[in-house]
Length: 628
Image 1 (cartoon, rainbow, N blue to C red):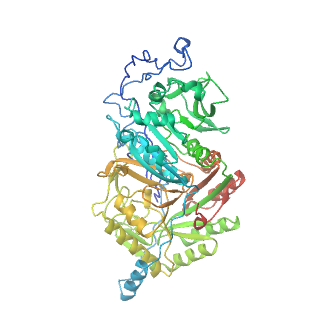
Image 2: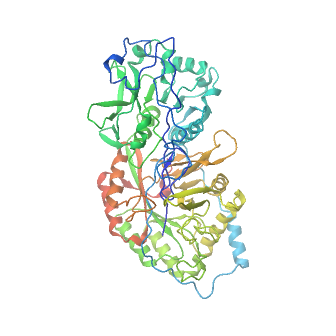
Image 3: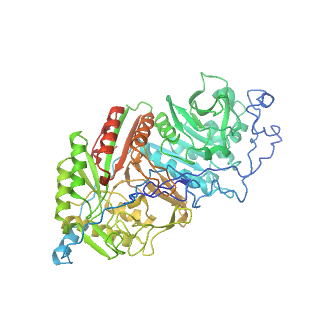
């Protein structure tokens, strides 16, 4: 069974299934010309060369640092390519298991349910199901997010802004705009400002630079174009106690934050990290550092001074489960809610349970959780389809949950042991189509199309041919009706199969489910209001609940799953890997350790992870209890 497919997205385009996600690296777009007002631009290694150090604290070295041009044939940061590590900013997700041998599916009952008047009644009940209210944020901030949009790679700015917006929603509302549209005084309408410098030498409006200099509102500035601000602020170094010194491209594979070394993908290397000189430790506090791999020192990665928090790179590029992205996610608390009481909650979800499930396996995992007083969720698709007979000797087969009383009994048993049922689509596959594995339920995408390329990478192709908001809504209603026909209450939380759907599909889901429990997939055009560009994908995991771009309250899944075998160019992922990720996530003061588990793997690894996370200090809670 292939619960989620793993793929890494650079900052936007492809996303790994089930695991879904990657991040993209944004390289500079051209050599910066020397600024005649402030002398020639420093060499990119100037931060290491004594002759290139700042000659005076204020007003010096204000021109843009040099950064290598990106070749037209360089695909290292391209979105939409098929290589698993060539995708954009979105944390990667854990790999999915595809057993070398799989047990045969349960044979269909002799008589399957046919549509009846009773079914019509159930569907009416499904349509009339009341909706819950989306929980509020943990703070009441209003944030203005500004992003770059010029030149060849300008579209990446919107994708990075999407990730920032999703995380910031934890603390209130937000508005995202291209920085070029900024007008004087706009910041005064907000409590906070975030600028994402993803385009080298993006022409920043003078009104923005003036307001950034004069405002007392908290500002988060990421990566590029800090030199444009310091050029307009001659006393920057003495006011803030630090000054940038140039891009450092020395190998850096981690970021140290709160005594924990978080990972940094080597593919981020070519773009470097903006180095800085600290002049006053009283004024400037280094909250995170990037140790150089050669042992020659470290680079200030996050600097807080006054109302400014500066991050020396884009924390959304080439992100992995143990990434420095986690440091940024916690630094938002430093800015928005610094007095937050530490809280470490955990979630576990039993994955890909359908009418074909083994009741004994379901009861076994329920017993394992119950014995440890661990509440859990169960993601269920209520209609099994195998149109090519992949698991039925070549003969097509299909059957509903209502036709499997033993599975229904096992699900009720799980509920009695603390389980919460989650709707995991309707069939967890799409029509009679290999999408991308077998066409069978549990293996394939339901709301998105994909294929496997010659290099064994999963490629996201786009919306399904029949896609529309009404089509998706009808599938969800059919799923709800199938639960009711099986004598089960319709779930109140939705999980997108393989974490991939189109914009209309996400809208249809939101109309019926205020809460989702997954990782999101986002596309170019969502923030700009233009046509949706499905070639610019952005997958993202969350270390805490957010209200995402689609308006849903999203419960986090950030640890992934156990993957005993290599999968689509991804290595195995074991219980020890899940626990390592759990340990890394403790840097977040109010975060989650959330993983999912397939019941066909038995209970030994499940028990190892449950006990291990509890030993780390995580407290398991029910998905229904999470409202902030």
